[in-house]
Image (cartoon, rainbow, N blue to C red; front, side, top):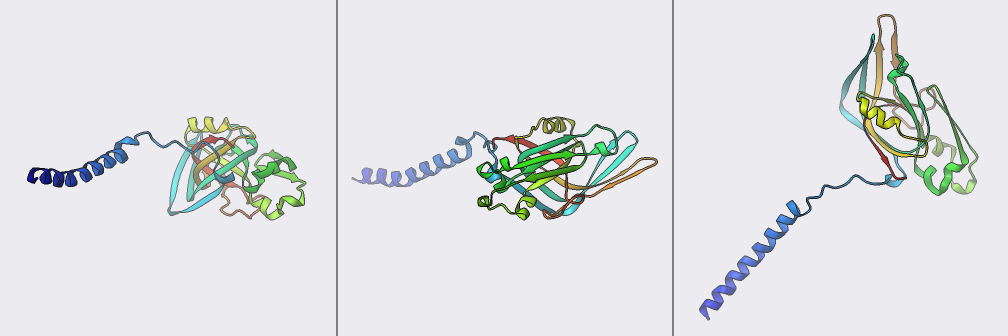
Length: 218
């Protein structure tokens, strides 16, 4: 009986330790498959802006042009591409290589985009719509959920990837909102980003220094 009792006492001590050890190993090593990126657009997308603790500076040189980019906000753009406009690499305007018009929110619900037409020109976006009352979409809501995004790149490979985005694609673009100051021997170039969702042309465009890009399911 003494031996049996000793074995039972040891079992009461060892079994919990074995279980704890197994669970610890599983959580540390057993789930070793890395988490995948979300495969779709989260919640019909959105515009997500976070102030930086201190301004961040970037630079880009092209020919005789030197550009400084100042960022005060981190920014995520998520939504459906409704129009696009590329620019040649001619400076200084070519520092912004691509404009993407993006819609999100309730504009993506219930096939609401069927009521819209979009047209882009040089740095401009025009949209027209005839939206049924039952959609609940107001002029204010529509204006706050369509954006003309001027995209700047420091990474040529990333630029090529983003330029592959087509109308109808859903995208998640992360980066910084930047003000641009450019100088050549004879000319200055100054352009500021929008930082609010309720301003209008010509001040109402976000200038995004692109740092990452995902093309996702809508």
